[in-house]
Every structure is written in C-alpha cells, then in structure tokens.
Image 1: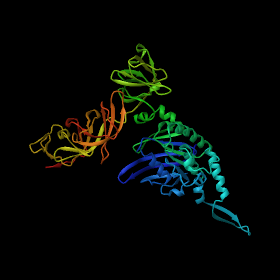
Image 2: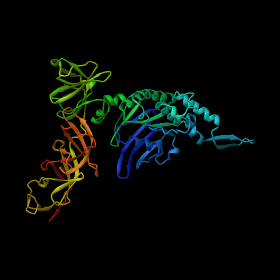
Image 3: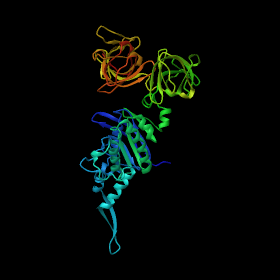
Image 4: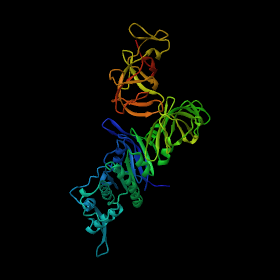
Amino acid sequence: MAEHIIELQNVTKYFDDNLVIDNVSFYVNRGEFITFLGPSGCGKTTTLRMIAGFDLPTSGKILLNGKDISLLPPNKRPVNTVFQRYALFPHLNVFENIAFGLKCKRVTNTYRNDKGEEYVRREKLTKKEIADKVKKALELVDLEGFEKRSISTLSGGQQQRIAIARAIVNEPEILLLDEPLGALDLKMRKEMQIELKEIHKRLGITFIYVTHDQEEALTMSDTIVVMSDGIVQQIGTPTSIYNEPANTFVADFIGESNIFNGKMVGARKVRFCGKDFPCVDDFEQNETVDVVVRPEDITMCAPEKGMLAGEVISVVFKGIHYEITVQVGKYEIVVSSTESRKEGEKIGLTVAPDGIHLMKPKYTTNLFDGVITKRNTVKFADGEFECDVTRLYPGSRLDDEDYLITADGQKLDLTDTEVRVEVLPEDITISDDAEAGGTTGHIISIIYKGDHYRLIVRTEEEEEDFVIPTDDLWNENDLVSVVIPKEKIRLSLKHTEEKKR
C-alpha cells in the first residue's frame, strides 16, 4: 500500500467569522503529484498554506508521516513553497538566489575526539557543499551554467525554474507549488507543464500543486482534489474525474459538458431533451437525475438517423476540433468533432449508452430555518417574507387582531415561533432591483442545463444559499434580490410549543 505522507483530518478554517475550509479530510501519498483544483476563492490556496504552516487550522489535524504538525511553525516542516510571483531577489544572481537558504541552514555533524568519544556540532554548510548542491539543483531544472546570470536577464520560464531550484535545493520531503505558472504566457505555460512533470519524476518527492486551470491539473497530476466553496467535491485520477464526475459542479468545471435535467423511465433508461435514451447507470423508476453528456461523446449523423435532430446554430474552430452548437427544440447541445458543419444545416445526433453519465441532483429544494414575526411574516436567509401562517395549522384562520385561531378555537400568538421553510427552486425569481424581494445576495454559481441556467444566490450575513432556475443570463457576483410569492412559501413547525394568549 502507498504510504501517506500528509493527511488532513476534519480540517476547518475560519478567517474572523468567514468559513473558508469546511471539515476537509483527505490524504497525500508519498511521491505523488497531487493537485488542488477549483475556482478562485474555493479554499485551495488556504489548504496549501495550512500544510506549509503559514496558516493554522481553526480545528482538525494535519499529520505529517503520522505525526500532528498542525501547530508546527513553517521552518520546522520539511516542505518548501514555490509562489506564483517566484519571490526571487533581483539584486542577487542565480547562484546567490539558490544558495540563499543553504547559507542560513545548519546541519548536525558527528565527530570523534582523541579519546574515541563521539560528539555533535550544529554547523553551516561549507562553500563546496553549497556549490555542489546549487549545481545539482540547476541540473535538475536544465539550467546548468546559469550560476552567474542576473535574474533580470532571465525569461519568465527560466525564473520559474530558478524558483523551483531554490525550493528543491534544501531537499524537502514535499514541494508546494501555488499557481507557479500563472504569470507565464500560454505557450510557455504548456511547455512548463511538461517540464514540471519531468522534474517531479527526476526528484521522486511529493508535489502538491494549486491551480484553477483544468488543463494543468489533467496534464500533470496523479491525483486531483476538486474543491468548491471550501469543500472537497471529488478526489480521483484525472481520467476518473473527467469521465465520472461526482456532481454537476465537477462536470461543468472539468472540461466542457452538456448538463440536463432527466428522469428515469425504466431499467437503465433515462429521459432528457424530450427523448428516452438507454444508459449504463441505474436509478429508481421515476427518480429525477442530472444527466451529463460530454461533447465528444455525441456523434453527428443524418437527421432521420439520429436519436435527436436539430439545426446547427454555431460553429467554432478550436484548433484540433470544431465546437458545434445544435438547437434541438428548446435545448442547446454542444458537439465536439473533427468534422465541421454549416450554420443552418439540419443534422441528427446520437449518444452511446456509456456516453451518458447520471448522478443524483445535489439541489432539489431550498430549506431554511425561520422565525415567525409579530407581523405574521417569516424571517430567514437574512430577510423577511410574507407568508400564510394558517398553513401551520390545518383549518386555522386569523382573527381581526392577526392572532391565529386553530380549528378547535385556540388563540395563538406565533411571534418567535421557530419553523422550517421550504421553497421549490422553480417558485423563486430574482431581480436586479434590491428592494423587489425579501432578501438579497450575490450569484456565486451559474450552470447551463440545456434550456435554462441554474443559479446559486448566497446571502451576505448568514451565507444562506438559494438554488434558482432562470431563462435569463446573469453574471457571477451580480447582486440580486430574491422574490418568493407568499403562497409558494411552505412552513412547518420546528417545535410544538407556541406562546398562547
């Protein structure tokens, strides 16, 4: 079995009152190239910094070789970090930059005196030892003979290699890389992806890499940890994560995907886009599912031979393939093919059963904890909404003073009554008028599902999430108000005791 060099156990991190990492657990095998992948703000760099010791977890443990290092300072950990901006010293040449840490390093040497007794000393490295280590590090990054070069004369790719050489010269057990290719142009970035993978093979140490670039992660990694919102969404090999995404976020974030709402209509048979398709995944009859079909798994054919038929509305050349968008009824389907088609052309589409990936929907309804106010409204998710409190008690009504009268004649004051609030996604709309709804929030996620967009709107203070389908295209980070009709808010009692008058 592979040996775990790093393990995170239920790690949570707050910055002030902001939850950044939410109960994360995973391990890293010795010698592995593992990548933390996710959008900006997902917590991947914070996770890396906690492994490095620059940030400390609020709770949970970080183990190194089975020992708890959660509170160990960075200089006591056998790790080195390569940053996006490299942090090289411009006034020092290449040799001096790489040797900087070695000159500060102390090693324990064992000696024997005239009486044969052993004793130890903490000593600096000799000049020859430093020169030998710098030379070896430069050989590993293919920059032999650059010792006397000024940093200002190096290209971005060369500076990045010097930063790596400076990190590995201290012979760390783990090399941490925080988006080290972010400052490079596209061509250089692709070259350095291959170079980094080769360096990893030559060194044989553990690489922990952070990026938001899916191609980088797929190209270089042995294992990918996909993160979103401070939570690990999926861990697996590049192949397994691409071919078997755990949820619609992973499917949408890793590569291109067609995502649809579907329903099981039989044994290994799913209905989406208005048609029934054989598939390899099996769920309960009539169960609602998310359907993911990769563009390259769709084959074009004559209209009469296709499972679906539609009209080409867009053709984009992507260098090695064409991205073809087809309008099939109200649905837009993206096809990836080395063959082109013309806009306006009628074509058919087919999908093999193993090209259809099904998963349980993560979001089916919106649930919140709420409180009834003295105005018989309900407060939840940083806002206050009109509601029908008589739904809490079948057969009840409100009297002239707005007290609730139950079916058996009891008079209740519902003020401060705790309730559960449920709202179906399709019963919510959003507006750019901040005063239009009961609360406001920012759009934090947008996923296109063939004929509509699925948005997640997060409120600012309590950070409650609303899942909302819409036909309109919005932008991430847009501030919107959440509008819910009174009759669409479903209430249930959280506790059975109410204040009686």
